[in-house]
Image 1 (cartoon, rainbow, N blue to C red):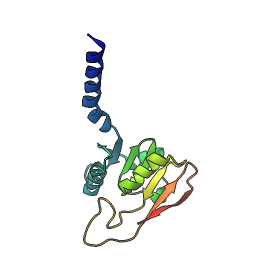
Image 2: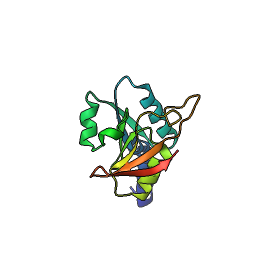
Image 3: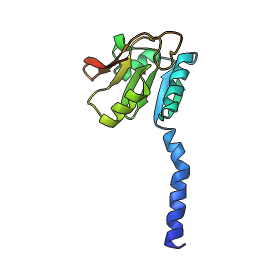
Length: 144
């Protein structure tokens, strides 16, 4: 096979496989019966962050393993790019963390605030997105 044909075939293979690689961007762990978790995953997909969904039997143990402080926990937990995203974190902030690579475990939106991604509805309440580190320290990363 000549060199040009080889490189063209390689480029085609990469372009065909890239959607498969994108599908591995992140995994969202959730209770199998949660609807807002699915809505959050759709928000992520619409904003260019591919998300696989994984139903979990023991979310509490998973959150503990991933070092999510108990008072920051919400309904679902995502692992993306080596970071943890707890609850209804907006996609733009997920992308910012992935780009900036801060020294944190991840971001959390405690509870399920109305108007956050996946919790859209007739009203919107202000909420904070908190960062947290290995020692459990946290700070306000953004206010929405």
